[in-house]
Length: 204
Image (tube, rainbow, N blue to C red; front, side, top):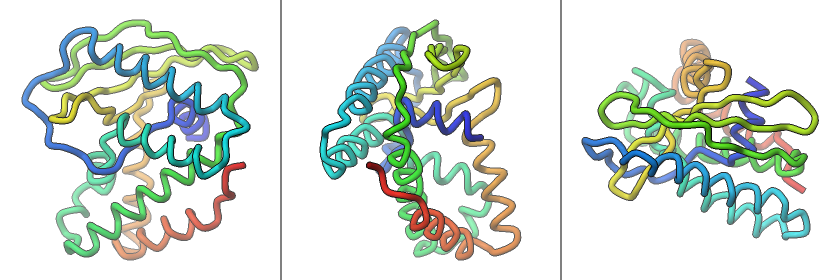
């Protein structure tokens, strides 16, 4: 899970304010170009070591909004518990989830060490999605292969999942959240996310 978070941090994802999906996949090439441009913008942000923290976080939030369908991801990882939660709990959970994700990845701003991302290819994944295959070259280790699942939304393409070494980010997070909800219910999960957010160090 730590390796997956480092990969996701490198491209800076997940998102708030999702749009409804269209009943079609992105056109060939669109999804790959989307990931390529997001990666370029992420690298520029990661390299901006002298940029004030507040400005970097603002850019990070903008990248998240452009890159990820955070509401879709948040609802998916909560699974069947989403339907049993009250509207207030759903709202509180999504806010806590967004804050947690932002803090997790912004706390890794200083971890950039010259990685580069290359688009390897893309293929359809179901009726609405495209899977973009990438390779991340790392000066300090062997390359990592990652697959980004991109869905066509009314506002444009959005990432809804990432797979590293065949392991799905959202499926892993879903299993983790389910274990918490089984013990502490949805309000307990919200408190856990808030506690984790507050304990994480701020980016420098």
